Length: 115
Image (cartoon, rainbow, N blue to C red; front, side):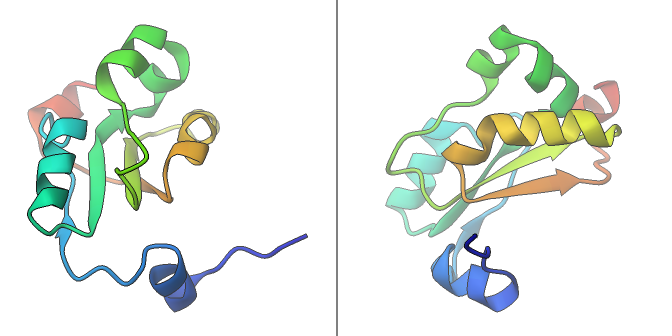
């Protein structure tokens, strides 16, 4: 079984050592915005923060809140979660469409608190 790269090997070999990163923004980091960021030099982009429970259970939420394309790489998908099993379930659903998954452990935005 092949081992996954970790630490600097992951940064260098999977994410290609990006210098310019478009961080996640609540309700702003959808595909069109990420592609615009990439056009102007962003080498790594994050998805908007997704709610893991909604993502894992609601097809319409998935359809409305996450999309990507071949040119949208490397990509980090960010989830908020408070249940490990639900987070893992949501992460498995996007694993083939991204290069990394980020767990947001605390966001002061009202939309995050609401979810």
